[in-house]
Length: 344
Image (cartoon, rainbow, N blue to C red; front, side, top):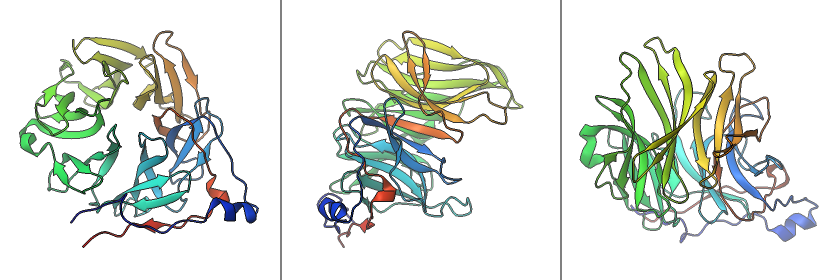
């Protein structure tokens, strides 16, 4: 079966003219560049956008669902995210990838998902989506064409290497970097071609003895020169050893530049703004009752951290895009959920 999300017809939502006639207001944000996940409106996380300085925060998804892991389309007009149709009760997780078009504010479903699909990432040309899934009764990274619906488990050919997950595209779309749980040395950062060929380890295995080194969510710099990931060392009793490390690794030379953060900091995801500035999701003061996840801007040169969100509830999973966006507050706009018709 093929899926044609951008060729199929779907029902249009209420037009801007009608909204204005009804007296609804529209908030324009000229610099809304960060999309992120937050549970600031209750225990269920939703997807929000905000400007680079943390202002003009606006929810863009329906409050009835558990939405996670947002990612910009390269055109800056759409966001893809992962939705748990079980509404986050933890009893029957059922994943679905959803696209929200920000300006007309339409949500629609664009491919036939498997309940184990995770972590959608759109290619730099906007034509493909990468994700990982247990569709084949084993976890693999998949790539699907957004126009034809053709889908391939690109890591199926090297399944003996370990468990692949959490991928990100190179800026030119020719490669993917991903987290790989190797059978013998644990978490490592790997690179492969976009078709799954030529997989190779980028990170250096760390000899920790009985301790375990955990790595998190690699991300490719805009120039393609560096890959960022964080890592921590844990004892067999899951006690943290030493600082939290943010690693910047040169793709060509394999050399690393390590930035150490306090031991009570947790960093589990982030993205690049440019080759000098990154966004990070950080929990400062791990173990303290009031500690929560916040989104920070981090300057690699000055090593200055700037807290952008400053909210008592968790804010995490930031993704950044350049360009000008129009943001329509969800509570000011009626949405008609549009399921695309799938060809037989």
